[in-house]
Amino acid sequence: MRTAIAPLVVLGLTSIAGADTFSGFSGVDRPYLVNQDRVCTPIVVASGAATGAAKCTKVAADTIAHLSIKPPLVQSGAKASFAAQATARTITVTRKTGGPVVAWDAPDPVVRIVEVYASQYDDRVAVAYVVRRAGKEVTDVVGFDLGASQPTAAPPEPTTAPTKPPVADAPVDPKPDPKLAKALADARAAPKAKAVVAWRAVLALDAAQSEALFRIAAAEVAAKHLPEALAALTSLAGSGHADAIEWLIEARFDPAFAALRAEPKFRATVGLDRKPATTYERFLGFGGQWEQTGTSCDKPEVRFTATRDRHFKLRVKTSCEGSVFDTPFKGTWRVDGNRIVLALPNQGKVSAADEATCGFEGAGDEDAMRCTLGRDIDFVVLPTRR
Picture 1 (cartoon, rainbow, N blue to C red):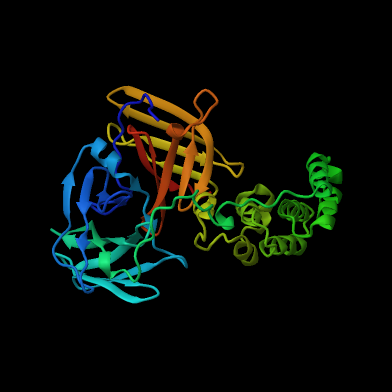
Picture 2: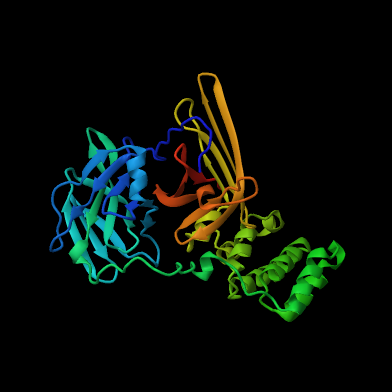
């Protein structure tokens, strides 16, 4: 997908001087990408050890395109395969289910580990870490080729259609029966005075119906029945419906629940203070608003808003020496494993060339999202906390 816009310069989102950013592993070869233009060969692991440094070279965009760089799989939470720790100059990567994988000595004492990344088949791993160099903290990235150190061979490329993401990341409940579908339509169209009765009619057919529990909870808050509202939200959290997380996230920021926002039970029920558990939650967990602060002649100002109905709006604004480019985009989004795919219709139609991807990466103690829209638009945004 090609877009007519002035070239944009992207900088890492960190206060650490000289920070490198890990951008992903090649999907067709062994190298990995640092920042947007350095292709590195990972250090080969032998008998649980690695020595030397990865060889990195600045290359042109067409060379990078041929490597088919895949968004990195950040190793955090219950699904993580790897972890890393540092002692003095030694970085040790461990497999959560199998002990140490590799030990490697960095050129400088390591201050802390920033993030750990794995390739699609866990055959390569990369570590972003901070060292103190020339009196400043600097983020470096090192990658390892696990190769023969794997417990089993990497699985072959799939020959069938890819498996759909877990239900929790693509919340779609089975199509309701005709009676439930009609009750839902009636409740959505009901006047305010009759809405609660209509939503209770939905619950009579499906006691765990997500939207009905959300609407009932909102109505109970409006009536100042706060314990009843919390009870409805608790039922929503335990409903087991795939789209329950969507409505719980909606409740985090909906003005209807402002009276409950400071209540510990409300915050725990809707997950307002916990770390995201799925890609969907990483994307929309703070309300679906992301931004990058722009600097003149340096990087663009970006405002990105995504909504539960799978639509998004994006505005990219660049300014330099009196010239201003303000470009809006809009389209739909979907979860694809650990990444977000944006579809930008071209004359009402969408092809693979009109799709762009966004991947997540660490930015301090929160997620940043890196999106690439063709060759000429690349940005990193942070969530706008409401």
